[in-house]
Image 1 (cartoon, rainbow, N blue to C red):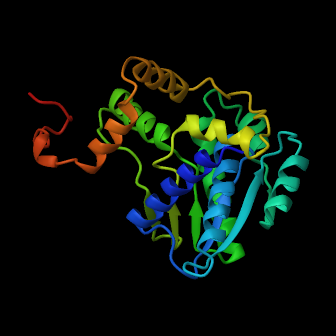
Image 2 (image 1 turned 120 degrees about the horizontal axis):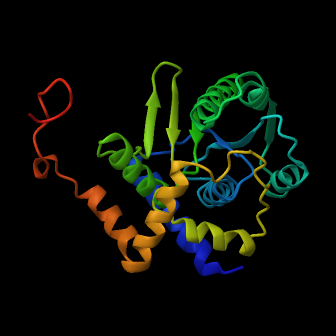
Length: 252
């Protein structure tokens, strides 16, 4: 294993946890793992962080997988969690049946995300945990920013930490300083399994278009990810235009 990569990613995760106060002593943290590269890698890195700071910041760590009913082979996921010595809960759902058979959604991603989010939050509450760790990385931060700007006319992206007061849960994103390329490299080095996504709508979304846009920008400007990250920390609302007063959302 490339120790430099794991050390770098541990530093990035530690920096995110420290800067945004993502984990406190005594927290009970669930990683929602889909079986994909991002969430499986986050489980690996958070487990590494937990072991490193066991005495300083003790917290519980558990994995939860939502079985959507698409027929995925979960054996590699079960073995992976056994290897990490992290408890795994598999929650069976009817999400795929609802979306593809009952609703017959042509654009299923939004509904699917809402159903998965609700099912995950309910399971976390039933388990008695107080935080959910999501595997959104720096590339996701950028893609969300550009999607919001291009498709919705807003300049925004998600926060590293979000408290949901309605259900008393905190969402944390320890990978916000970590790039997708680092995660991909970690897979082979740490022997992290990846379960193929069987969803019929996989890679047929607007986000995939924006992912390609970000990749093209990075080809031309190799440091764009770090520059983007710096701009988020240095953001000053005074540098933007005043809010529009027109009710239709347009300047006259």
